[in-house]
Image (cartoon, rainbow, N blue to C red):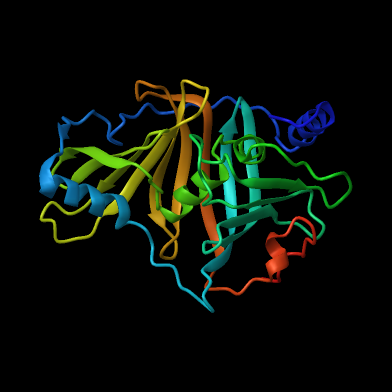
Length: 294
């Protein structure tokens, strides 16, 4: 995973210092369908079933504004929860370029911040894992060499408390789950479905609409297995700030659908700016530009 021992050691020292004090959470156990009791699932098949699955899978994707051929946005993201028995509490400035597939985040504090994370190439997935080709860099503007050649999942696990890759975090933020395989799924009751993205690393998405089928699909949750672990992460959506942003909560879930206490972090939005024009250096680890003024 690391290119050499020095990279590995520096990565551990830097990121251990970024996580904070211990706290023992109590996590509610929820069924995989997102309800207090498991629903009776019925497999969907045929042309009508496939049409429903496609609509449920991709209609919740937001219509992001485009400016000068680029879809970009900035916002502030507040994190609160627990991970590995430690407290997670922070406020981050976030920039997204959804055209090229780039993300940057850093603590909301006077420049220079304690760290800057930059991930690029978020759509260049060719292997079994969603971050196999992601270029991730952790920059330490206050002193220290950048941390490179570390999977985005490992960096985000330490910085945010949740073991998602950078492409998976983008999928949670946008509500758009990329898929290179076929779709399967189940109906969980009137206007409620579970979509299964049958990639090399399967993913799930839960969506709901009015039982009359007159309304569009709304996203309830999405989840994915964590490579090398018996856990999966699950993101549940609790509301909207400005379209297309949604509050969400990312938790750990056992293979049998029972939530556990490995990580449980809530994410909420503020100071959202849609359709912004960002300097190209915002996503450059070589010529890092300070974040633009709010």
